[in-house]
Image (cartoon, rainbow, N blue to C red; front, side, top):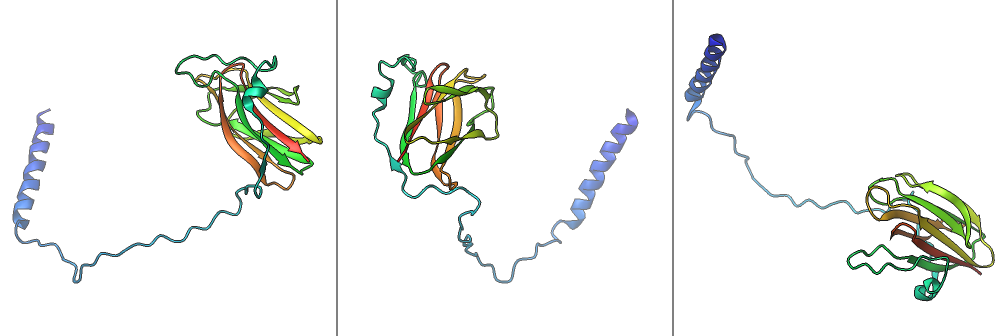
Length: 196
């Protein structure tokens, strides 16, 4: 113990002694002509690998209240003050000429075990999907007229609500819609594609 204490004291004294010798003799080198430079960021170019939004997607006008009201396929809104996700969520309606559509989805926030069931025109096409950080999905052959896709929250994972990011593409790979949903257990997020 005495040896360790001696080494610490000796080290400090050498440090102090060496600093005293240089005091006043050392002067930092000043730049000859100090200038401030303005840094101009390079022009941003949009990434080419990212999907592009379909040119002016035509929105289908549907009243979501009428869609969910008095419909046994949709759970009634809970009307709990301060809890916004205990309701069905309308994600939009879009008109397309596409024959095939690709739908992709993944957990939008913290990957916490959210599960969904997917319906196409009120028929189950994916009975149970565990959402994770990677996109999963399917292709559908669109029928003429209304193609309604429902995403039902089977649970809310370990952190409420059931959250997901989704993307819908036309047959040329252009994005028809890209958004998110936040719904409680038993509630549905709905998107409608109307094929001309």
